[in-house]
Image (cartoon, rainbow, N blue to C red; front, side, top):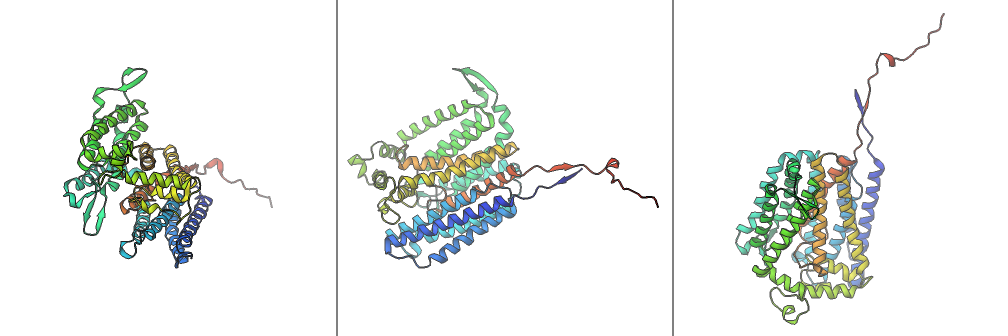
Length: 465
């Protein structure tokens, strides 16, 4: 038997290229618009800036074209547009706060973008088959635990920022190892639950029409809960604790198809969060700011006050439907507007329309990630893609929910949009893995072709002389 290889879908890659060019054009227009609004002229070097971004994302596109030709054409353009808009908004905030040179955030974010694209390409080149990552299930767990423990062991002067001990800081260098640990944990969750899913899917007692698991099978979820609580109590990081435990719950649900695990997980997290709010001052302050953002005493509190949240809400209200316009608002009044509160900048200057457009880009990445999970044929790939896609969705929900006062603030950043090298790098790596899984899901099966047999011999007509 021989196999006939299916041709690479060139039309899909051309679609991706056109969308990437469109994303670069929007970014350059937004960059020029900020300069016109703030200085009444197009910023010098705008054309070169656009060419640089185009070259950068073109490299990423060529890597996808070469190493993942069947991948979904939406992943890269959506991420490129979010990353480009993030650079514009960070630059706009730099100008408003009169930052320049080595203190400006936009040039550093651009450097992190270059590193992120390089790692995106590296993952596509190195990880030719996502199923091989399953061989490193427990290695990934060990790496994740080491990365999570490092900030907790360091002195507060080298690990604490705004009450959360999640950083590694030495001199002018700072990095958040938890962002890389997130990807390693997703690999571990997927690999572990592939092996244990049949055991964890067994039904125990039926209560109120819901089949609950057996008592002996509660070990993994209790261990994940205790680790998330340890992160919450030791590092005072509500966002990461919620993110890691939430990803585990979703991957567990996808693996077992048991809704009872979700119910148990939600109850466990609520119990832990309430207990933390009553015992950890940093978490308690965030609860108070969430419940009473306009209370005079809480608003003016030097530490743990609600000034930041209140100003973000004022900014969103000022933006209205269509926004004040790029460069024409005052988002710089909000502390940390380029990281935790960058969505308030979007809401003030681009309005509800801009917020919905940004959320739609995230929705595209998440839904295409879920589509890749459904399409891939191996169980590990399904769980890995589901974990990566839901991890991004949960991070967006927690961040946007915090600034809109739907839930308490957690300190998470918006993927691709917020300032921060750790977050940007980890998100480009996660996107590369989604592209790899999508390529495997969309790759057509090779059709076996039978070898010519005796009955298939060519018939020849012979004339008599």
